[in-house]
Image (cartoon, rainbow, N blue to C red):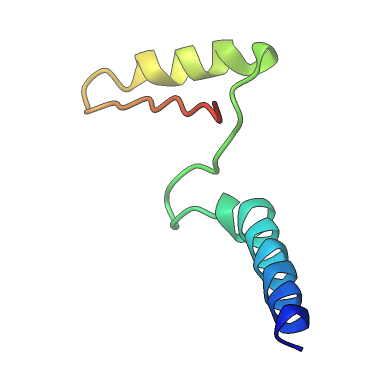
Length: 66
């Protein structure tokens, strides 16, 4: 019985994590542009936005799963 509850709680945790990453995790506060993934096709857009905001503080964070 305890093993069954552990499996159910583990499955619920995985589903909650997936919902957060793919659903709620992509929301941004009002007034902030939406999050995007950096890819070869949209690099020029990032570079233009970065260079256009040279009068303010800019931060780029690169995260790697490894």
